[in-house]
Image (cartoon, rainbow, N blue to C red):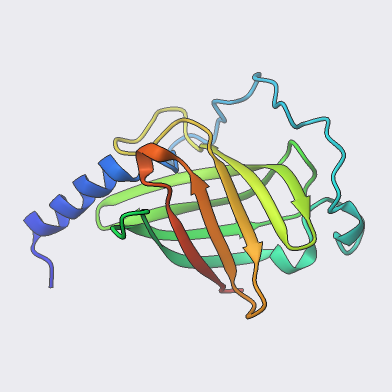
Length: 171
């Protein structure tokens, strides 16, 4: 069992290594509002596989997923819980958090592109003020459906150790 000092050391390490997901759950105002999203006008190849045709996120992604993340050097950086909902390119299509001991980073994700088995999203700060140890910058995050029904997760964020993980559907 981890001592309080050990837990704080782990959280501090995670805060330094894992600056992927922003957040403070206090205010739901999106800091990226007003900034044009470069992909907002792109056509989306995943539209045809969205199920009901009401959005760009394919049906198999919809729902809540969870899994542990590690940095490229193998250091645990937290547990990601994310809920996907229907939406189109440029819209917020997911919300969730990464949690490690006392560190919690709440985020929303904007759809950059979708294909039948792959989503590219940008994460952004959920609250109006940054939470210590959580990045307020957007990152390229890739979610890929695998043959065993899990999601493979990869984030391009050098400061966070380019975290990866496997997510399983909760509901």
